[in-house]
Image (cartoon, rainbow, N blue to C red; front, side, top):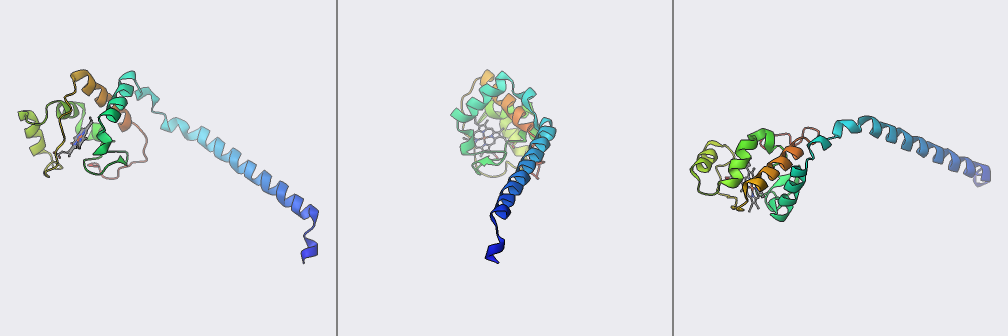
Length: 153
Ligand code: HEC
């Protein structure tokens, strides 16, 4: 039995195996090239969205929120908040906390805001809040394969 495993058998396994995986690699490259445009969200990656991402980081929004599942589980998922609440709500929410009348009304009307957790006031100016909204618009446009499955995050 051992004698039938010749040098040429070993060589054939080597060449055959290599060829097989080169073909798998080429097929996967082809498949990626064909589908990548479906995931292209770069039109939403404006300079404002880039500034907004920076603000997201320096203010550690991810210390409480998840963004497409990444971050902490203290506060709502924000990957889809742009469609869930809309830009005007997001802006009002970040700017006018925590005692503003409009904010208290919005909070009372919203089903997820019935718990005692609160978000701090970051004292951001209007431009910064607009940039954050642009960033959340960008994340909202990322093709995440319908994740999160539940609209409320
Ligand atoms: C200390 C924790 C904490 C940090 C940091 C934080 N948030 Fe929040 N955020 C919350 C909590 C808690 C809520 C929900 C409050 C409620 O239900 O009343 C919330 C709600 C929100 C909402 C409304 C979500 C919805 O579904 O209605 C937005 C938008 C938001 N935060 C944006 C941000 C942004 C942008 C940052 C960074 C600048 C940030 N948050 C940082 C705790 C935090």
